[in-house]
Amino acid sequence: MMMEKAKRENLIIEIFNSASHGIGVIIGIVFLILMIFKFASIISASEFAGYIIYASCFIFMFLASTLYHGIQNEKAKGILRIFDHSAIFFFIAGSYTPIILTILEGKAKILFLSLIWTIAAIGFIFKLCTYGKYDKFKKLSVFIYVFMGWISIFMIKEILLKTSFTFLILIVSGGIIYTMGTYFYKKKLPLYNHIIWHFFVLAAAICHLVAIYNFLQ
Image: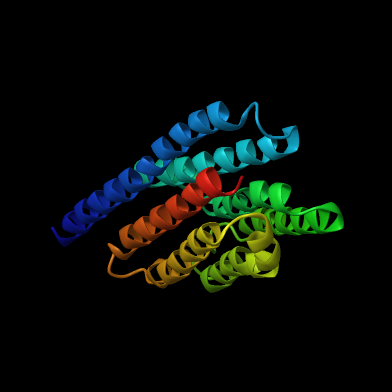
């Protein structure tokens, strides 16, 4: 009886987890369409590629999370968990890409772009190598996520010179929201903590999306 109740509660939690990031998928698709119409003919090919990469990583992360929490088959869920966790690395790198391609120049552009995507690739390999042991390495994963996210500190001067204070505020606000949300991500109990984490992610992602779509150019 208790086992059945626990399974039922877990299923309800997973439905909410899936639905919360399903919203992110929809937002990402809408953003991709709007972005194509807005930027296709007014910015350089490399800058436009940055937006495409960002939108694709945005959709991929939220889709991976939606599918992982939505599908209850254990074998499929195990495979999807790799993508759910790895997608975060690619999403962070993807979020940086249009910013780096737009505001940085020369060696700085190459350095930051190489750095952020190298960390994302290492993160992906790390997730493959620690498959089945994610809880054991959870704190390390969170550290890498947060470290990647705050590399932007080293770009503040260029951000202020090339964009606006509004852009900076939105980017920093998103970073703070992500960082605050990791508290709930690290806590397995109560189960609804993960739903709270999902809404922190969604809120932070929207902050960055608004910044990149409205204030980067």
